[in-house]
Length: 187
Image (cartoon, rainbow, N blue to C red):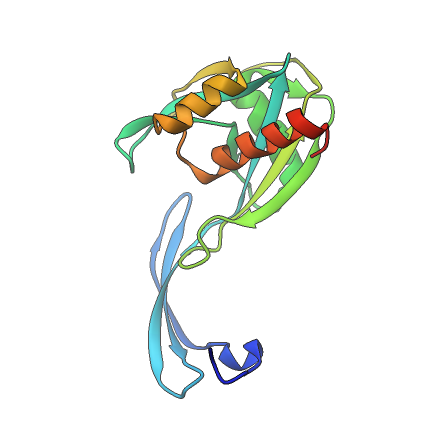
């Protein structure tokens, strides 16, 4: 146990920031920081504009997309999601991404939670929404986006988690939220 210091005393002060890379989706910077004990260290930080994802239920089934994920070198089944455009409201992004990726439009949406995906090295904040009020819309994939859409049962979702076909945090969280909703009727 530490000597009962208040957390504010452990804050790291940024001395310098060096931008290493700036891409379409992320940027990478290295910060030199002053440590609480007086020394210095470096922090590699991925900057991300944030993203929205949707737990969308269609006739009691979860809408998912399957796509190849290059960092993992395998196909993954995930809930619809996408990055926020500059200045975009997270709910608007969720509505947009759901329709673009699945061809379904949400009549209403509710925020479940917002969380940081990997705070040890990235500032990406993901907004997770819920809807079970869907109508047919228009699928409109980005030119570099290739995916298939499915509506899966809760049992299929559990099986896909066991098989690691679902292995990303947002989709696993979506399955837990869905299970709670199934059992209690509450989000």
